[in-house]
Length: 405
Length: 69
Image 1 (cartoon, each protein chain N blue to C red):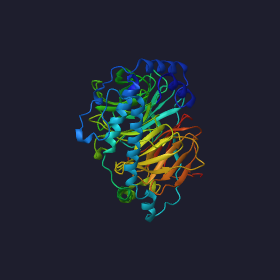
Image 2 (cartoon, rainbow over the protein chains, first blue to last red):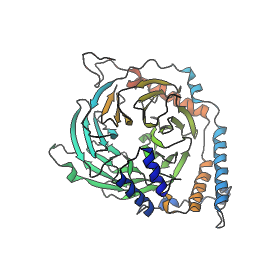
Image 3 (cartoon, each protein chain N blue to C red):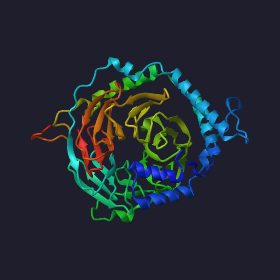
Image 4 (tube, chains in turn green, blue):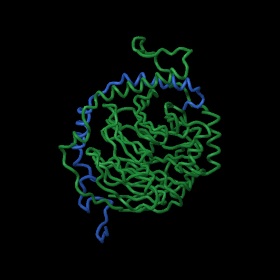
C-alpha cells in the first residue's frame, strides 16, 4: 500500500505525475494530514446474517498476521471460485467469426493550440465538439470539424489532468493539481469571461485524476490521488457519496452505459480495478491482475465488461458476469505503458494510446493487434471514441490532439 | 482512503470486502463470452470505425485532394 512520503518519491520517479517540486510537497502535506471532510458513512455495512459469516469472526485480539493469513486464504478462495467457471477462452468462442481485414485509419484533423502537454479530452454529445486540458493550465473547447477554438479558460493551477463535457453541451468540468473539480458554463458570447462563472464542485485532499458527469449536468463523479472516488451535486457542491477501497491513488474512472444501471469502474495505482454501486457506495467486484498502475478503464458498450490500460504495457478485458479477466492484449514488442483505452461502437475494436507515442488497435474478441498508428511525437495521454463512433480523438504530450478516422 | 486507519482496521475492511465478493454470483465464461461475441455481431454493421464509410459520408474525411499514406 502506498502511504506517506514514499508515495511522493515513487510519483516523482514514475514521471507520470508532476515533477513540480511545490506540487509534490503540498501533496505530501495533504497525505500526512489525512482526509478532510469526506464522509465515512459508506464503511458501515448492513450486518450479514450470522450463518453467512462463514469464515471469520472479528475478535479484538486478532493480530495483523492472522488477519493477513485470513485475507490470503479468502483471496485464494475467490480465485478458486472464479476458476471453476473459466471453462473456455474468449478467443476460442470467437474463432467462428471472421478475422478483421486491413485498417486504413489516418489523422484527419490536428488540433493545435495548447502550450504544453495535453492531459485529457472529452467529446460533446453533439459529436463534433471536444474539450481538452493541458499541463499549461488551459482548458480549450474545439470544433473538431473545423479545428476552430470556441472557448478557452485558464485555470489557476497547472496540470489540469481531468476534463469532461456536460451531457447538455452547455458546460465543462475540469481540475487537477488544485485538488478540485470546477464547472464552467459555456457561454454563446465569446467575449464573456468564463472564469467569472466558475463553480467549484468537488474538493479532494489530493490531485483530481478524472471526472465525469453522470446522466445529467447535475452530478459529477470524481477520482483522486487521495485514493477515493466521490459523487457530487453540482448545484450545491454537496458530497452525495464517497467510495473507499483503493489502497493508493485512483487514476481513472468510467460510468456504466446508462441502460445497465448505476455502477462505475475505477482503476488505481494499487493495480486494482473496482466496480462500485453508485447508490450504496459499496465495491461490488474487484480485479487485481495487472502488474502495475491502471491508467485507464472503459466499459464495453454492452456494459457487461470493461477494458483497462496499464503501465505494465498491457490492456485487459474483464467480464463482469463471469467475474474474471478474459483477455490480455499485449505483445513482446510493446514495453511502454498504455495510458488510455476506448472501444469502437460495437466493441469489436479496442484503441489503446501508449507512452511510446503510438496507438495500437486490438481485435477485442480474437486478441490480436490489427493496426498500429503513428503520428504523435510524444506520449499519447488520452483517447476517446466519438459518441457516434465515426472517429476517435487522441491527445498527447506533443501538445496536439488528433482526430482519426 | 484509509490513510487515517490503522493497518489492522484496513485489513478488517479488506476481509469484509473479500467475504462479500466470494459470495458474488458468477456465470461460466462459455456463456458470457458467447454473449459478448453476439453483442458485437449484432452491432457491427453500425460501427463505422470497423466497417468504414464512403469518403463523402464521414464528416471527418477529407473532401477531394491527395492523401499521402
